[in-house]
Every structure is written in structure tokens, then in C-alpha cells.
Image 1 (tube, helix red, strand yellow):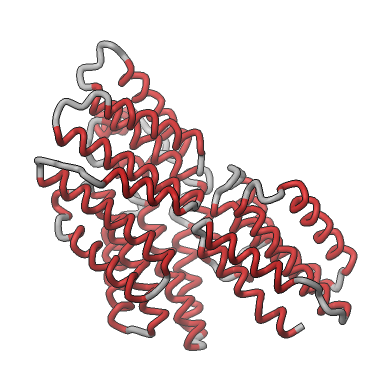
Image 2 (cartoon, helix red, strand yellow):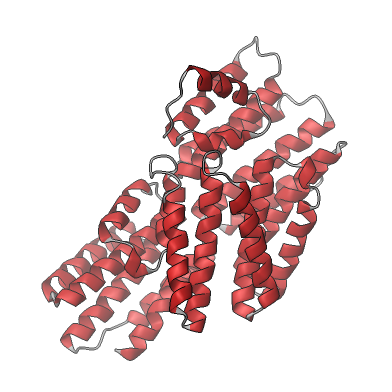
Length: 413
């Protein structure tokens, strides 16, 4: 994304030694992988003067690459580096820091692939930690707050969400002791929780809080230095605006939400951070995302088991079914159904989220064909409920909500 001249290369070399890894947002995913590989090699050298610090840095770099690309191999690299760091600890604080990094990796694994068991493992990493430095204790509290936020989102009730938001508030009180990148993550998590609870409860106070957090993130995240943080904040703001517009039937708010999505999409290219780019596309209203864009997003999220991959697959099938229905093409509808059926038969729930996405796609095709032909779809309700149950068991409520959106269409057939 960026071309580095001689002077910029000097700054880049200095940034490599910085504790603030916000500079990683300026380089593409491939270069992040190169940096992680270089750091891993350096950490493994006998001559490495500070192996613990080197292994920890390598772990963070591999974790960032995994976050952007969904690479399971990169997550495994991060785990291996964190384990190597744990073997080189010489102080109580280093032992705690290695455990916190392990927790962050499990947290990312959940974000990418679902599976509530990852959250349980992450929680076990934090239990029994004993740190001497206040900065290490603040780091543990921050990661614990983010973990609690994920568990609260799975629970779904407003009281649990508010309790998790309170933990995020507490963690942010120690912002001066935390890495700036982590502070931004905490603010995004708090805004997401406040937005979800605020929309569900029609609570203006919570919505205002989410707006303040997102506004601060956007204002502080320069597009020249923090493009991905800025894009994530804009995307969340756009999603919130779209949700409020739908509740109020406000066309002006809906248009403003679209503007925010457009601004988010302009921050970086799809190769710079594939999963961030996909998240922007999925946050848009269905009708605003072209089929070709969804096809590109699906190719970028091909790692088996990815939550975003399942969401993209379902959205692409929904768009294809809608297009076939608009064109009145029953033959195309039959082709879509045959393709989905073949995938379902071959997959046999080996990849639960992809299986659930195909179930939802099958239900959408069946409903669209029924509307075209005047027939009654069979077993669609059961198909959708199986998909909802699987998505929830895997810790992917966003996919479950996509299935729930089809139920009213089924009732209308």
C-alpha cells in the first residue's frame, strides 16, 4: 500500500523497535508476515540478547497477520512463539505477560473461528496470574475485559452486556499504562457493546456513549497513520446508524450510514487487510454490496472455519437467489439449489459454520423458488432452526441472526 523511500525506511527501522505497534497499520498483510518471520528467526538465534522480548514481539506480529488474513497457520505460529517466550521468562512479570499473550491468541481464535471453548481456554490462561508491575496488571485487566465482552455478546442479555461494559470502562481508566493499540481495541469493544445494548433497549444514553467512543476513535485515528482503526470505527458507526435508521424508518439516517461505509472502504485496499475489508462489505445493507464484491470477499476468506467466510458465503448465496428471483429464472434457482445440496452432502458438518451458511442459503433459495412458482417449500423451517442452533453453538451470533431474518419470509410464502 505504501512505497518507502530512503528517509521513510529509516523511520521504519526505528518503528520496528518501538513498543507501540500502531505502525503496523501502515504496512500490508504480506509485509507483516515478513516482519513476523524475521523476528521469529532473530528470536531463535543463540546470539539473541533478549529472547523473551523477541519471542513476544514475534507472537504479536503473527497474531496481527492472523487477525488481518484469517490464517490458521499464523495463529499456530503465534502460539508457538508465545510458548517459546514462556520458556525464557526470568521474572514474575514476564511469566504473567506470556500468559496474557496466550490469552490474546485464544481470544483471536474465537473472533476468527468461533468456538466458545477458546474463550474458556483464554480465561484459564488468566487465572492465578501474579504480576508485580502495575502496567502488567492493567494489561491483564484489559484482556480480561475484552474476554468478558465476548462472553456477554454470546449471552445476549442486556444486563450481562452492561456488566461487561463496566469492566471495559474500568480497564480504560488505566489507558496510560496500556499500549495505544489495545486502548483502541477496548474503545471499539465498549462502543460495540453500548451500541448493541442501546439499540435493543432504545437507550439514548448508551447510544450517546457509543457515539462518543467512535467519534474519538475517528478523530484520533489519522487516515495517514491509523487507517484500519479509523475504518473499523467508521464501519461500526455506519452499522449503528443503519440499525437506528431501520428502527425509525429514517431515510436520511440510512443515507448517512452509507456515507460512513463508503468512508471506511476508502481507508485501505483489500490486500492490505483482507478481513477488515470484508467486514466493511458485510456491514453494508445487502442491496448495497455487488455480487462481484461478494465473490472477491469469499475468495479472500477461504480459510476453512472462518466466521467471516461463512457470513460471506451466506450473503453471496442470498444475492444469487435474489438475482435469480428478480430475473424470474427458475432454472438458475434449481442450479443454485443443486450446488448447495452437493456441498451439504460432502461437508457433513465437518465445517459447522460453512454447513450452517449453506443451510441458510438452501432455505433462501427454497423461499425464492416458492415465490416464483407458487409452491410451498418443504422442511425450510427445520433447516433454518438447525442452522441457528449450530451458529449459536459455535459462538457465531451474527450468522444465527442471518438465519432468523429468513423466518419472516418463510411465513409469508
